[in-house]
Every structure is written in C-alpha cells, then in structure tokens.
Image 1: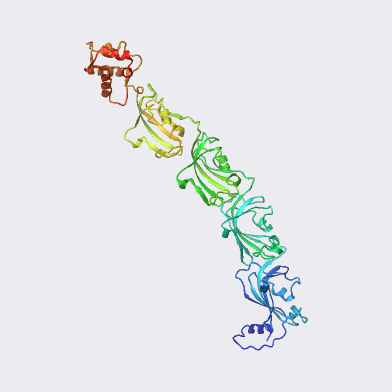
Image 2 (image 1 turned 90 degrees about the vertical axis):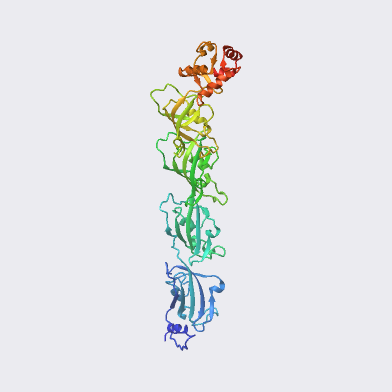
Length: 566
C-alpha cells in the first residue's frame, strides 16, 4: 500500500482499524478537499501568495507550526526556492479560498537532517493550507465593469474631484471597510496622491452611476506594511465602487436647452424677477428638492445674489416657457460644506427648470392691438362705462379667468379703481369691437400677494375685446355738458316759456341734450333716478318746480351740486 493510500485510510481510522506499511513517498501528495465554485486565478510559478496553514507530522499528527497561532498569514513567492520544494509544488494551481492538504516527503522537505530541533530527520510533513491571496509583480490594476448608465455625460479624469460609495474586501472576500456603513460617500481628488495608486488608476474613466470592481495588487495598495488591523501586509484589495459624483475645480455651469418656445422676443437679464419650476437632483438622479412637490414656483431676482452663484448665471438668457437643464459644480453651489443633511458637501447639483414668467420692476404694461374696426368714433377713457370680454392667463398659457363663464360681458367704469391698474390701462383708448393682447407685470397687477388663483408676483396675460362703450362723467357729477351749455340756461330749460320748469319739463330738457350729444348723464345708473335727483337739488323750496331765481341762486353761489348737474 502506498503512502497516500495509507494517508487516506488514516482519515477514516475513527471508523476502521487500519494497518499501513507504506513504501517511500516519491512526490508531493495534494488533497483538494475544499475548492471554491469560482476560481478566476490559480497559483503559478513566480506568483506571490499569502496563506494560513497548520503543519503536522504525518507519523503522529503532532503540530510543529501554525500561522494561525501567530495570527499572521505566511507570505512567500512560489517556484523560486523560497519555500521547501514540496510546498513550491503543493501550492501550484491553488485558488483563493481553496483548502488543501499537502503531504511532503522528506526529500522535498527538510531531508535526512531535519531543522532546528523542530522537525526530525526524514519526517513526512502535512500542511493544511487556506490560500488567502495571489499576486504577481507583473500584475496591473484589474477593472471589471459591473453596470454602466445608458448615457454618460463625462468620465472621470486626473484632477477631478469624485464622490463614490464602495465596499472594500480582501481577495478572500473578507470585508475591511465600507462607505455604506458610514452612510457617507468617500470624497477625494484623482491623480493627486490622495489615494492608493491602484485606486487612482481604477477610478479613471468612470461615469456617474457606473459600478465597477477594482482589484488592486498589494504593491499598488498598502504593500508590505498593510494598514492598521484591517488590511494585512501584502494584501490584494478588491473595491466594488459606485460613482456618485464628479466635477473639476475648473468646471463652469453647463446649460442644456431642452425646449425653447418659438417667437421668443425677450430673454432674462440681470435685475429681472423670475418665476420658475424646478426639479433638483444629484448627478446620480437622486432628487433633493422640487418646486412641483410644493405646487409653488420659486421666485427670485436674477444676478443679485439671492440664489447660489451658479443658478444666478444659469438664469440669464431664458425665454418665457423655456425648459433647460443646468449642471452646477459645488464651488458655484454649496461648496464643501453642503447644507445639513439636505445636500452633501462637494455635491454637483442638476436642475431641470421651466420658466413660467419673468419681468423687470421697470416694465410698463405692454399693449398689442390684434384687431381694430374700420370705424372708430369714440375711444374709451376715464369715467366711461364699458362692457368687455376677456381671457386672463399666466404666461405659460394657464387660464385663470374668462368672461365666457358668465352670461354677459364684464362691466366697469374706467378710472373708478374697480380693476387692477394694468387692466385699466389696457382698456383705455379702445374702440368698440377692438381686440387687444395686454401683458401686465405684477407691479401693475396683484403684486407680491396671491389673489384667488393668481400666484404671487405673476405676470398676467389678458385677451380683451371692447363690446360696448357709454361715455361717462367725472366722479361726483351726474350730468356734464359736451362743449358749452346754453347761455342763458333757464330760458333754454323753460321749453313752454311759462317761467317755471316742473319735473316733466326738466326731464324732457335733459333727455333732449343727451340725445343731441350736447350733454352726458352718468352711465350705469337709472336715468329717471339721476334726473329726479338733479331736479330735487335745484327745487330749493320743494314746490315741485324750478324757477329762474332758484337756478340763478345756485349758479351764483357756485354750488358744486348745481355745477355738477347742470
């Protein structure tokens, strides 16, 4: 029976009685009793290895050495005589995390001399080995891409600042560090010596959102010294990396127009006040803020320091209705400090913005005539009573109000402060049948306050049509002359010449003046009521008729009521 067969039987000696008389063992015997399912690399000549072992005598099973007892794995190079010849042979073809027993005959171990009083002459040695690491001086950083985003705006380069998550393991799979456990990315510059050489190389060319496996040989990691208690000497390191963010200190704001409306005649400049919606994300797509979630636009002045520097630049040159993507590096955003738990330090910010409207505090009301009738005998002015149709919208086209929702057109008296200032201006100077488009900045609208469905600081867009116009009289007056009135007045009022003017005669006189275009009653009020009030004011003695002395007295006294009415 040969020695290896005898050894195998000895393994079963707890079940059976075995008698062995082995002949001399001629070569190393290897028992690969635990082989990992995945073995990307096997030990070859000139490879360096790091392994744990228990060394025992074949004869009696007594231990003569153990790396476990020293709590330090054994490190050596294979095939160049740095190990006993039997181990040089016994380690070949081994995988990381493989366990094997290597039986080494004396002539491939310490021979007929033994060593140091520990190993006797002609001893057959048994090594129980667990391989932890393999590397070679010719090794390079190994990069395996695990996943990559569909689009990649830029890749990492030397001098870039990166933020990434990682799990760091030894080649055996033992975890030594993880950014995830700290709930914080690892942030650093590339190519400036802040990282181990292998990571400086392994992180180059990555996209944000990319995952890759970076395998760093010991001489490009922590080498002979290791690092603390977690990374042993001469350890190959494996990093599973997720790139979260990248920028360069020389980066400027980048702007990508997504949608630009046609017919844009004006763009934003410094000093304008803008209302816009936005989604704010990090480069990996994680949302950190959104105006849409609050159902309220973000409102601010441009170029005056009210927003981060990068956004101040990005808001220049925009059209109403434009959509653009803005990428802001941290030195133009919130820098190394970030904002609490809201925005991490050194974060690149991505804003998808949609401009709702903008204006300048110096903007006037903008009026555009879209239709004008051929005949225009009268134009609307202060004190006129008008009827008009309208649509009121935001500049993005959102309809707020319309006169179509009512049975009849809207009615107002110009100059009576019944409508906002901008609408008042837009309604003046119109002919019946004329149509206009009127843009009203908020300082001529509802200002910084909300008004029903009108948001704060909103620019309003009105489509107007003048339906009816009744010329009016100044505030405080019920009747005015158009041009000069009759002089003397009383004979003209005394239509029948009987020196007295009762209500019926007074009413007929006033109506004739209005019909002849010589006088004007206050519109919007019942004509009979106005005329009765005028008559009562002139009938001083309340006898039901006006005589010349009453009218004369009123005019002589300069009574406002008399002047107002006649």
